[in-house]
Structures are given as structure tokens and as C-alpha cells.
Image (cartoon, rainbow, N blue to C red; front, top):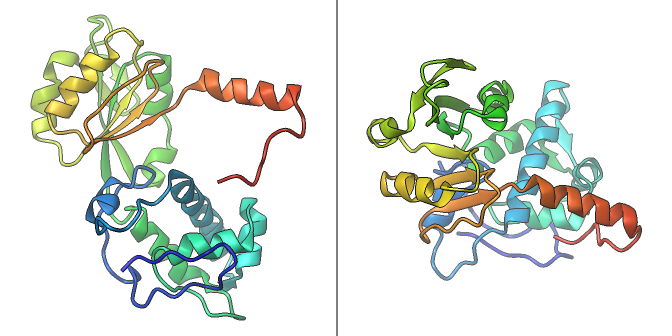
Length: 254
């Protein structure tokens, strides 16, 4: 059962919720979790999933330092949100804390890892062996969070066969055959805008259901595929707006 509580509610009433129940999912994209929600239940907002990731990182740090409990006030302060928002976010998935006692750090850490799909290893395929692809292939934080780069692909014959992080660059024409033997991969698109949609169409047809897109292009996917796009120019424009118009941004907006 998934519940929804108002901003000014308490710890949330969710009965058994999802606490202690294995969830299929994949971290930031959270697609499998959404798929299994009852149709009458609203999807979990992307902003909520991002905050869950923040809560997890701070809780892991507190757990490493041996802290036993954390209040919604403490989590809110660490993550830059409000105690009511923390309680609301967590109440979607269960009742984890006790009023006046806070949340058990180790237990909540385990539950958030389960909710975010981090109880298993996820295979990541990087499409594009350019500068962004190289940075991603060499990023050690992926493995620490349970994501393994299973392959890097490019259509440049000078790059094919070359080492790229812990992988060897493979030709684009091997994508479909490799995907057929890769369990539930997440594809990372790090190629120019030209041809990006065609590549997406290919990997979706081959069974990919989760795509992180760095290509500066408007990508469309079927409803069953989860797409997250990272547009660095837009992020910089957001920062330039904030610098040009101080005080105009609502930092508390979800």
C-alpha cells in the first residue's frame, strides 16, 4: 500500500507499506517501482526520488559515524528541505520512525537502498566514447553505488578496440547482440544530437527501458521507457538566471 500525506502531517500512516518488502527498481529512474504501483496511485515525483537519494547519502554518512537515530529536523537541515517534506517523502513507502524518537539510521538506510533499487548490481552501457563518455566510463562513483559499466560503444573506427576506463570500446553494430545478453541495462547516451533519436529507437527496440541522455536533443520514447535528460547548457542558464535575478527563485519549490 502506498499512502499520501499532507505537508503538515506527522510521520505518516502507511501500515505495512513497502518497509521490508523487496522492491525492483533502479535508483534515480525508479521505473520498476512505478510500474508495480496500483494504477489509481499517483506516480512518485522525480523531485521526491532525488530527495530520497540525498537522504540516503546523509544517512550513510551518519551510519558510518555510528549515529543511531536521526530526526526529520536533522535530515531536513542536512538536505536543505523542511521536516514536513522529509516526513511526506518517506510516508509514500512506509512508517519508518517514531514520533519523538526519530528514524533509526541503519534501518532507514537499508530501506532507502531497497526502495531505490540498490540491493542489486545494475549494468550500464555508455553509448559514445567522446569526452563525456570517457568521464562517465572512468567515474569510480558508479561502482560504489551499484552501477557497473558493462560496455562502451562508438562508431569511430579509431576508437573501437581501444581501452575506455575498464572497458574496451565496441562498435555500434554490436549493440543489439550485446543487449540480448545483458540483463536490464541502463543506457547512457553521450553522443551528438544528430542521430541520437535513431540510436534511442534501436536500443529501445532491443529492450532497454531506462536511458540517461546527455545528447543535446529532444528525445522521444514509448511510455514504458524511462528517459532522463541532462542538458548542461540549461543548467548553466539556470545559474545565470539566479545570478542575474537574485531573490526570484523559489528554492523551496518541489
